[in-house]
Image (cartoon, rainbow, N blue to C red; front, side):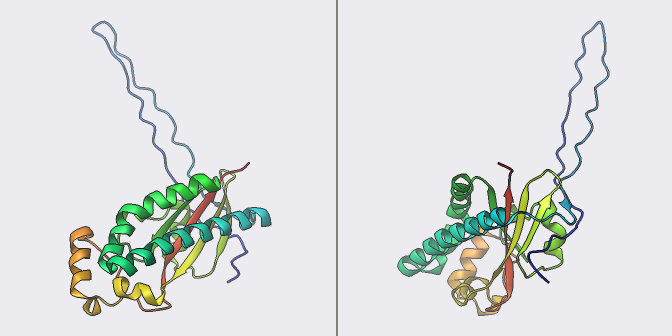
Length: 203
C-alpha cells in the first residue's frame, strides 16, 4: 500500500449541541432542535499537498524525539517503572506542547490501548481497525489535512509492552497500579504497536 495515496473511509467526529428550552408559569416553549453537524470523514481522491505532508512528518518527528528522549532519560536514571509514569503524566503535555508549536493537533493511539484516553479520532478508526502499517495521508471533509503514521515496537519498549508473562514483576505491579485495564502487552520487537495521528488545519 502506498502511504501517499488518500483512502476513503467513513468515520467522523460527532459533536452534539444540547439546546435547553425555557419556560415560565405563563408560557411553555418547545425546545429547539439543532441539527447535528455532518461527521468529519476522509475525502476520497484528494491528497494533502507535499508541503502539508512535510509539516505533518516534521511534527511527528518532533513528538517522537521529545517523548522518546524523555523516556530514555528516565529509564536510564530511574528504571522502566518510572518511565511508565512519564507515559501517563508527561506524554499528554508533551503532545500538547508540540501541537501548539507546530500549529496542528497530534496524538498517539495503539493497536491495543493502555490508556483509554488515547483512542484514535473517528476519522482514523477504520484505518486503525484495518491495522494500516504504512504512512497514510488524507484530506478531511472539513478541509484539514490528516496523517496516520505507524509506530513499530522498538527493542527497548519490549520491557513494558512485551509478552505479559515475561514482564519484570516491578513492571507488572506498576501497570496494574496505573492501568488496571491495560491491553498493550503481548507485542514483540518490530510489531505494529500503534500510530501517530495528525490533524492539520488550513492556513
